[in-house]
Amino acid sequence: MAISRFRGFLGGFNAFHGVRNIFSHSRTTETTNWKSSQHDEAARLLSRRIYSIGDPAASLVPVLDQWAREGNQVSKFWLSKIIKELRSFKRHSQALQISMWMSEKMNISLDPRDISLRLDLISKVNGVEAAENYYNYIPTHQRTIQVYGALLNCYANAKCVEKAENVAQMVRDLGLTRELLMYNTLLDLYRQTCNYEKMESLTQEMEENQIRFNSYTYCVLINACAAKSDTSKIDEVLKKAESDDDYGIHWFVYVTAAEGYMKAGLADKAVMSLRNAEKFITRDEKKSRFYEFLITLYAKAGYKDDVMRIWGVYKKNERVLKSGYVSIIPSLLRFDDIEGAEKVLEEWKSEKFSSDIRVPNYLIGYHSRKGFMEKAEAIIEEMISRGVKLNVWTWYYMANGYLQVGKSQEAVEAVKKTMKAATVVDVSRMTLNNDVLESCLKFLKEEGNIEEAEEFVSLLERKGFASPDVYQRLLQYIREENPKPNPNLFGESEESSEA
Image 1 (spheres, rainbow, N blue to C red):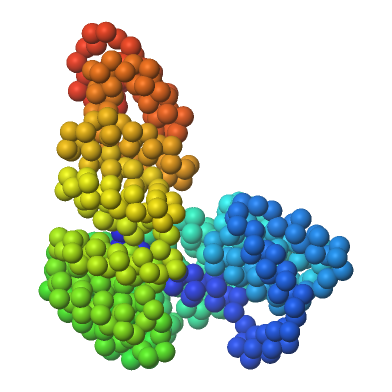
Image 2 (tube, rainbow, N blue to C red):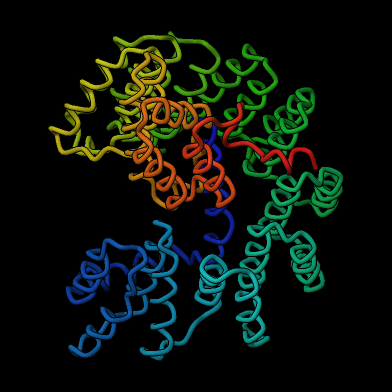
């Protein structure tokens, strides 16, 4: 989980240095616009109306139309600000709705920055083909480097290597090859698609054109080396970054290297990189994410003293975020420090975001794996009393724990709750353990609870955890009085396995 969060951070960094940089305008202009708009109460009211809509799938057009019917006015600056904020919250469809409304209903002309942002949003909401169609209607004189950069990023996100290369070539033909953004986007695309030879060729082109690498460039190169388990190459890239005083070194370059060393089993070198990372955190940076990475990676390397040291510094210097608790509790559980984890949970309970079940879920999962079901149940009861909403993983952990201690009926009920709580997104991300499901079904059949077993199987199929073929096989198993031995009810059928 820590590593996925780390990659998420790099993804956010890429977005910041990628499409988001394309839309940035001068600090002076934005400050002036902000000062001129800070007394625009009407615009702030529109913002509140928009943000009060909790459903990210809801249309904002009725809100905007009602706003216009009331005779209100709003500046382009405010609309653009709302669009960017919605985009930062991944509410891309609503951001696109405002962008379209801005030009279609307010007749506000779009500059290349606006066009680039819309191109990015269309790609995220409707796909690459829709973005291409929009690009084709952009007048030639408005196809600036900003627009090319946005189109390149669309293709990169979709891993369309050839199309991305074509856009990059158009940029070269325009004589705009000094854009670091283009190279970074292509480099990361090649890394994600394992085109390592093309990465090497592109870095040579950068050096020939005297394109200075930045910290993100070095992170991409280090990640590529880590994917190939080439730690000597990580050493080389890190050394080059260290010699690049102006652009090369940042704390996340060392953290990226640490992750690469960790993957190769070189815990000592990973820790050395983490120590170096600590030297490069600056006073003006928000340090929360930095501390969270250090906690997670020190824990993975087995250095508990450093985990506790960084946790102490974090609490002293910053307000601990929810993600901080998500980092420290599983890190302590790596060392079986249940007392320490429970102490942190008590601290979490006093925070305003203590309604998120993910934090106590770590302890529920730990107790369930250890077979301490009474402790897990006690946490659940407390969370329910506090009004904390349990999720699919809460019950999944409990189901596994109940089976482990021989409480089959409780396991059946927990699996049912798992399936009932599962959303479409949950179903796409999680895989229920076939051994758990089989154990539940066999228990129900042996107990003669055929009706409950059929309900169980039906729930599996309705929620998308069982294909139609598996569903029919399970029903047949339940209804047969003397079924043939089947070691794997959820595996391939006999016909398909013989084929």
